[in-house]
Length: 428
Image 1 (cartoon, helix red, strand yellow):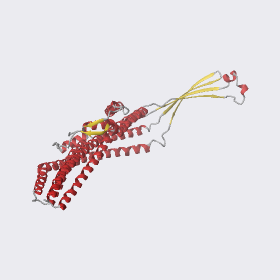
Image 2 (cartoon, rainbow, N blue to C red):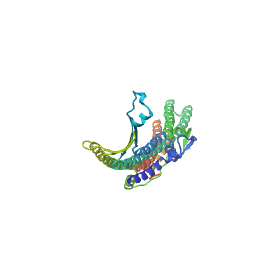
Image 3 (cartoon, helix red, strand yellow):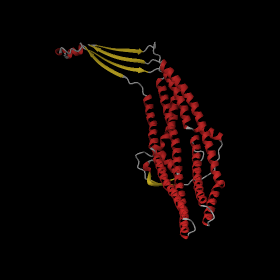
Image 4 (cartoon, helix red, strand yellow):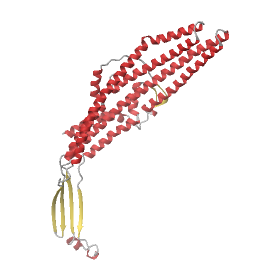
């Protein structure tokens, strides 16, 4: 009964885990996608990432082991002839073969005792359950990695656009001051200092372009290289959507849903069932034998029974080893539970901090940086401000905008870290 329940539970977990693979075989050609949303990227990663596809095959391998665990011993058959006169071939007459040669046949079968087969099947089903939970945990990590990579692409795109806008805006400042040099309003040395500052903005554009290519490559590796076109783009922007959650609720949800904790708990159950199997292995199997002998006109049937005497080997070593494995598995469950709670606490702290940083930027610092730049440009063009004030305002504005984009990306990533720590999507 217990083995049957284990099989049923195993089948449910395996079906849920392997379903994405069955729905989209790896050999099926995929049309290259040109635009990706975050949800699209996650779906493609779960369906097409080769690493997760290979790990899912571990479940199939474990199911094959279940078949092996349920097999019964094969019977063995032997046949023999005694008294053949091989060195006197003239004597090998029909009469001699029929009357002087003894023929025998034996059928042997091993009867397992102690419920070994049922316990093997239970252990194999437990192993499949653990394997399936490990696959689910790998999928949890893949979801986060994909969302994080997607956010990195959004950050790279926004940084590239910002760098291009800053370069265009500063180029206008350079053009205006070039006209002022020609008109004699500013010294040529001051113009050179402004013109050289343009190099920093050009370098920002180049660095942002490289960062965008690298971010897209990292995302493409996760979703499957052939799944998207070479020129694919992502849909979406860096945004701040306030989310609320309590730490206690997140902890309870994590303890109920984290697949790595479920895997540890199932591994403990596996260890206990494996220990029960080792105790069952103490029972000596019985060998049964049925024999038939034909000698001359006589026919005889014999039966035999054989069993090991458990005088020395009573499987003591394997039982002791299995008991230690049970204690190790129970300690691992406790350690995993602590790690889950720690992950939630750390993710929640990062979420609160990143949320506060975004709100600081939005509380007025962005507007102040823009106003400071506008005033510095106007004052300098009117001949009242200094070149150092203008360059400092340009640098401050650029750093503030870059910092804001990074804060938005950090906030979006912290939301996904909450989902990773809990083990399910609790925040969009």
